[in-house]
Image 1 (spheres, helix red, strand yellow):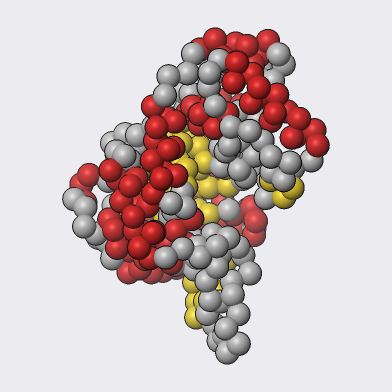
Image 2: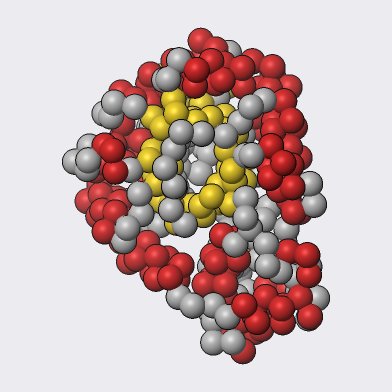
Length: 322
């Protein structure tokens, strides 16, 4: 992969695509600007995020930055197409935007190339550094592997993208993709976190063997680990957290507190500690949120915390230090 370091912390741009709630343009721009000011130089977006709104907002800010000083990734697999919306309906996939556009799954080479061209137009930038196939297991994993991954390999050979990968919530799906193609990166969502580490058993060792870097996302498990104290109404995997999950998260928080470390700080830094993890990407809805995240990543965390979590059975000993 011909890319410089991604940095320990990256910016995920789903939030500035109006994920769950609308955001003013000025707040979105200020949030991206705060990430830049905090030293973040890796920015990830997707057409899926706000039906292109995230790409437009992110590109508007990054267009004013030196192009050689940041790394940009977006995603392919979902092509955006205009749709009639006479009643002003809103998007049904979690973004507070008008549903005047629809997503269409298209893993073909023509679809991949069109997706990248459309993304470049929305971003207003001259190139995309990393292209990920986005959630192929949600649609048709076999078709994604058969059609999209070879197309991405060709685009990399042509120099149209610098690196290629796949993003998914499924460690199993990513494992199949790593075995099937010459990938540079995988974007792993929620499967290697302080709460749970199913990817540690086989995906991460396979990535180490194949020289594939991991971009770790969803490290707060849908917000469950995002606050020092775990509230009763916390979510897990985009739904209300069951009692046993709440209990484990609270036990993690209590142990962290005993070392003077807040739960989100431990969650963030644990997610970055595995040797195959190239960066941790976190979103934000306000400038202060991303500034706080950057501070958390820089705070000292004693290595004894991981040992104590393992001793209490809250963390497997073989992952305590990555």
